[in-house]
Length: 95
Image (tube, rainbow, N blue to C red; front, side, top):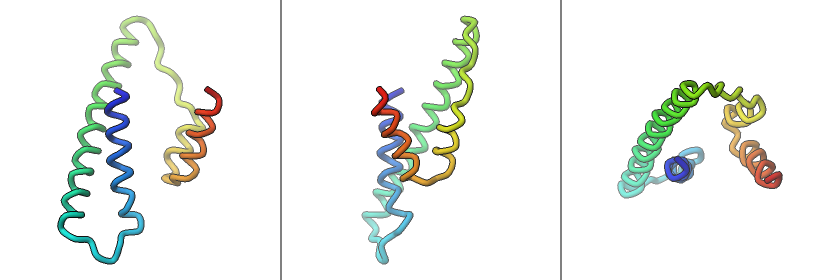
């Protein structure tokens, strides 16, 4: 799943230009952004499908679902990229 997570992340990074789009976007840019959107959607569907599969298999083995990490959910759901990146960096420093 790491490969899909990386692909999705890279696609969203490409799409982040749309937060402050340049005045003029040429056709080639639009094609590249469309490709990034398709990649993000494809990777997300694979991640979601396989995460559900992993949870089902875990339950069959008697392993309880992990509880959501409140701080991780809050940082991710704010859509504040800087806050999320700071949070992720803090996790990396712990490991």
